[in-house]
Length: 159
Image (cartoon, rainbow, N blue to C red):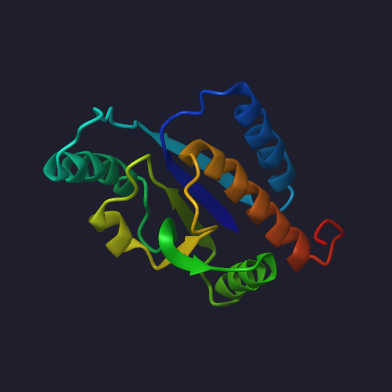
């Protein structure tokens, strides 16, 4: 299985980069993983609604350029479906059975995802109703994908 993670912005904190590196190493046993970073647009404090849409659209265009035809796209969005770890593992497993061997997860920037990216998504998921920094979400996503593979292989990790 091939998994791409397309995310807005670079990791700045060393502790988050170390966590990402650890999960990338662990996941190499289970899938071909590629993380693509697109530039985050600088957002002034008092954005108008139009400016916010324009910034999200610019980031969205950069995201969409990395999505290949035929990929199954899962956007991380606060309004998305919430899964348990077991349910997400089952979902990923069933995608593979259905011939969807290329999954793309998309993590937006601080303003969220553009409408174009949300329309392109085959599915929207959420980890919580709470808001998390998008850089931390990258670590959470990698951990959950790793957990999914461990669950699907009946390997110890998930409790």
